[in-house]
Length: 149
Image 1 (cartoon, rainbow, N blue to C red):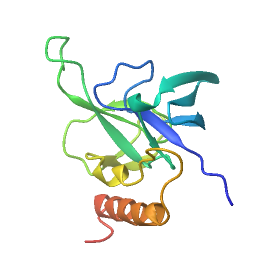
Image 2: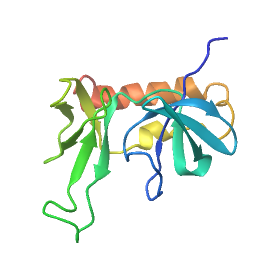
Image 3: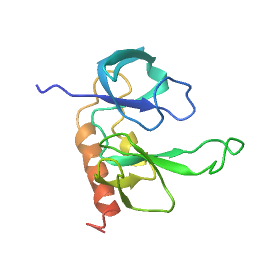
Image 4: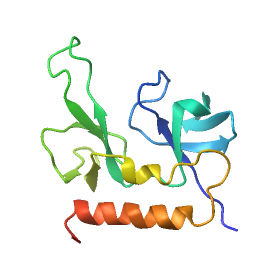
């Protein structure tokens, strides 16, 4: 049976030493914690603080900017590149965006609803869950790029 590589990112509203919107490779996953690789250092993060998926989503993660009282541009959203984790300002409702750092073109994930179907709550996903979630995610990507209706 092939090994599944898990990926984790901080859930909304959690105070955690991980960058919001960036996906981190999971080295070990237990019911209590996720041990993630952050620049070749292992961090133990409480499982409740992170969203864990059995794939690294190939779409920009949309993250809210600083709070309204912080600085100029507060309240704006920015995207985190799915390839290199660079951040870029999102000025409009773009369906896809090219990364200014690495040049990768990817759909913008304005909603993570399609990826929630992949989420690994405890242990391994139930049989058939990955296939159904993969189909939903591929459909969302195709729609974002205007490939299907």
